[in-house]
Image (cartoon, rainbow, N blue to C red; front, side, top):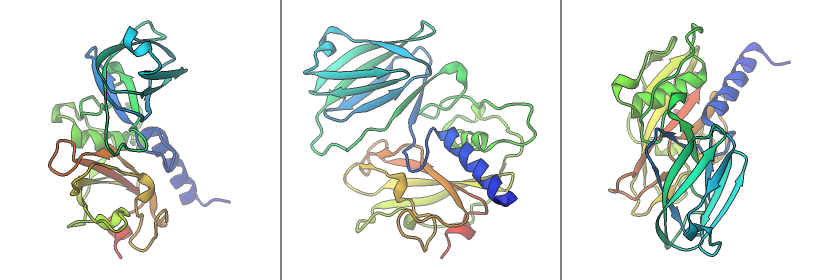
Length: 284
């Protein structure tokens, strides 16, 4: 039989997975808010792009993209699977939701010499849903009847506290900022193999109901772009890859793809959830 603490940790871990749309070791999807502004999306030739919509939908392609030698599309329920076969200039895709509303994309495709194995998933939400978009814009949506925030809300709050304008970050019951208690480059948190080009700096931490969410700023020191893999997060100083420390609950990157050093998009945020302050979990 599970002890009460084990049941509580299991409950929060499940909520964390729901909050981020993942189950370990999946990669966090980038979220964009449809606010009537056309969404720009650039494909890499040969790399499938998954786009998830808030409801079942149907896609309308321009004549050029109806050519399967140029562009391939598969739509099942709420999910589109798009792959550019060749490079092409900007085209307009229209996606019709069950509500009758259209979501518009301006898409293009480029050839990359060393393409990644996969593209970061894109989650489309409606502006009324009140969630964070991929550029840090959005609003906080919190159930007002609870006296304590759920982990779903504290993760959302943490991301918005970092990425959103201050005027859009609302107070959430039970959440409080706490000292991180760490200094310096914590690159041991990620298994980089023989290359140590990532810089991982502790940034902020929050606590709710005995749990802790810590944000680390991850900067790419390499001269090439990287796709970060959540499975390579090192949960304690002593564990090997995929090892889980006894006080580690989950981790996820805000964006899994980062550009090479010095280019826009060369950094992201790593969120780590633990059941005690982070400095007592990863020290070694």
